[in-house]
Amino acid sequence: MSQKINRISELEKKYLNQALNDNFSMSTNGEWLAKFETSVKNVTQTKYAISFSNCTAALHSSLLALNLKKGAEVLVPSLTYGATAMVVLQAGFIPVFVDIDKNTLLLDEVDARDKINKKTGAVIVVSIFGLEFKYSNFFRDIRKKGIKIIEDNAEFSISKFNKLKKECDIACFSFQASKHLTSGHGGVAITNNKKIADNLRSISALGFKFNSNSSKINVNKDKMSVKSRHSLIGYNYRLADPLAAILLGQIERGEILTNCRIEAGNSFQKILNNYDFVTTQEIPKNSIHTFWTFPIIFKSIKLLNNFKYEIAKSTIKKPYAPWAVTYDEPLFKKYKRDTNKNSEYINSRMLLMPTGFWDKKILKKEINELQKILDKL
Ligand SMILES: Cc1ncc(COP(=O)(O)O)c(C=O)c1O
Image (cartoon, rainbow, N blue to C red; front, side, top):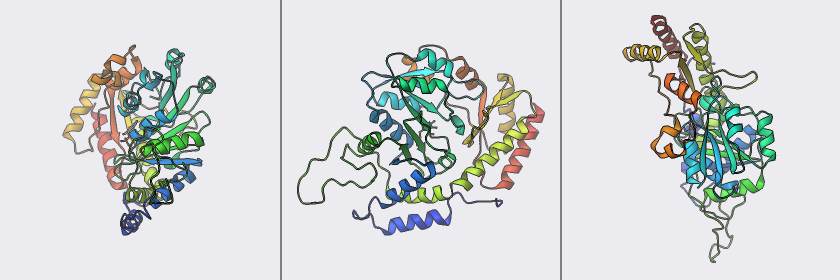
């Protein structure tokens, strides 16, 4: 790989220009969406891909597309971005917070097992910080009971996605500005089920009748006669064509863009292995980590604070604190059923290192500086 890459290259600019040259004409509108969705289907080896204005919209629509029972409970991990639980409320369901595994930071299967009951309609699993979610027999069993599974892959790179697993009904991805591939904002949902795909497409566009394999609204060929079109409650969640054009270029360059973050993640891992006062996210055997960010967990809060103090004085790219444990957010307080010990422990001791280094030299410099800071602790 070369020393430096452009996050947005001439390719995306070329596609964007071509899309703009279409003049937002209604006859061509949707063509870039179609190209983008085809490339998503190819990359993920999935039958249906439906684009959305963002991943939150895709997740919200996914919950609606599954026709869960009224008042259904939806299991979500308690350490994730607020959108994962927010969409449960948006869709009129009840979020049930599940603890995370202390090592992988993914949804904890043992706690999930305890929280499944007759009311459980779905589980949203999150590939947190870019670590893929692997299914165990537990998930195969709950699917047999009719429980649906949605993957919130907002933080996982679609370019490394290895086929939709049979345990999963819908997987959603984000193209928001901080993500591996981006058009500023954007999202996509993938599924192998035609009925679900039809629902997703309709929900994304005000409940219009749609062919799930086409992003073009095709209500009536005879434009001049009035026809009914709204078949169910939908939202206006469509992605704009120029953004799809940018995303087509990003997907074509997805390996390069993602490998950059993986290289940064591996560099962090290599030096952090030398310090026994920190732990990092465990990557199970044969799992892929796309390192949207790199979490460092300090063994004590005192060490975390010392690290923050040293980092603040340095020129290093500043790490982020994680989001609050979701049930501690004012909106979600009333849904807290128990204390998720692992989420609380990790949340109070973790910092997230940025991995978006497009220039290897800068990455190297930052890693050296980080090492010096760790040596001081
Ligand atoms: C885990 C998770 N879920 C959902 C989202 C929402 O994605 P978007 O910003 O595309 O709506 C994010 C965004 O960062 C996220 O990290």
